[in-house]
Length: 371
Image: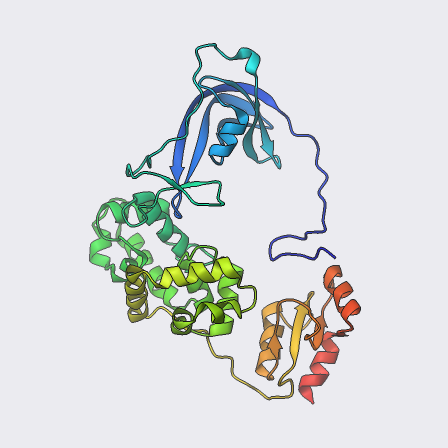
């Protein structure tokens, strides 16, 4: 009944062994600025051997966590690994606190650019609003753009992006497509082969599908799944840009917060200029058209679930669309068929049965389209 999200089953419970929890000394607090401008406090600790590795740092997430822990300078803190991986501070040993110790105060200005921090209503994080002049935000957006789920430029990495930024060659994602071999080969750590690989990698990224380009833009709240839904529904960037708030929320899985964020992104003239340059560079700004083979499924809505013998998951979805059908992400009373492969999700099976939606096999589907 709880169903699943794109990332996890809501109905599942993971039972875990109690994590090892050990004390160490808080040395200092440092602050990291992410691509969205969110400022994350990090506890720097006296080295501690914990669950097989030496821990020196632990995220404190936001000012509310610092306040709830009642952290003071030089506190003795207890640390454990969440999920046996991520170090976190769980509580403080107040009995070992000095009477002169001062409470930790969250910073008021950005540690990178000095801009005053803001805290948005309803959010826990503090943000640096200087998104166009704060270097970690700029390089962070470029790192997001080149990652595997986005433009997949594997010849670029964090250090190279920082080097390109500091040299003045790249200030935004569109600048990547203006880079030349001659500019790159003169940089430190770039010989002939590495310079050629970088330019070739950037050139190859122009073939990346539109939904991945859209995800790579880093629009707030537009993750990989949402980018795919927007790309499928509106088909090209211009349609998304010109869509009204009402049209945006009509798209599958697009709610109020996402729609407002998309509108805000396209109202920024600098963003529009970057997009124009990306398009002029040859980056794909529209969804590839799937060639129709027939219309036997015209007007029918399908939900696809499970693993198939003769198709990949994307392949079976393409086959539905090629024959005039439509793919929807969740089962409702308006769904015509659930196309079920092996290991179909139990929550989808239960919902289909409850709503009386017809469940068909891969063989049933092939009979439908062959007719």
